[in-house]
Length: 252
Ligand code: AMP
Image (tube, rainbow, N blue to C red; front, side, top):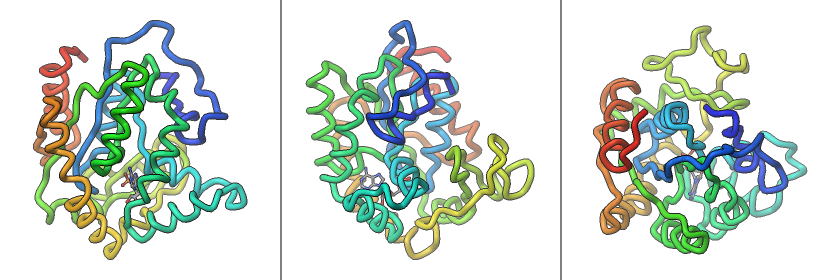
């Protein structure tokens, strides 16, 4: 990940400055990742960021970062959002959109971005388009990762994350070098509360009901590419790169 991608402004809010934006305006890379929970969007987002330099921005990470901060700092809407997240329900659009609006600087950053987990509903996508159009920036590519539901459940049950640096592992497919310890920062890995079976099932249903309609939304804007998400992260990433080259004309 590039030095400017410390994501402080995204994870912690507008009072926190990132280490610095790229001095040179980069070719545009404003990408949205779509796909059911467990499909591997977070892993692809990190790989795209490492290769193309755009910042990986996840709304789920904002909620997890807030939860990890001092509980007394949490506003009532943020507490409510975290409760929704733990149950596997979507956070209300208004709460999510308020957080994104506060972080518009990230969406107009000259380094570009990869959005993972936002937008998640058609009203969120429409609001995002309006916000970005005010700054003359646009979503250029929406990648939809696709996998059968049985495989999604297997991926979710083995997923472990680092609560400190948000790195993602999988017990079988992408194990940490030392079991249960983050390779990058040495923190103990955990299973996300919402990766536990009951919440994981609810999230699949929420995806089908609320997020799948976004495929039509982005297809109508001619920015959608479907990606087969089966195979190793590296194999999926080679498909991702082919789509980025084809649609955005970017080499790695
Ligand atoms: P994720 O890490 O993207 O799977 O997000 C984890 C959880 O955070 C989701 O299951 C929701 O409860 C909540 N969440 C994250 N992003 C959004 C969003 N854009 N809209 C509604 N809820 C969200």
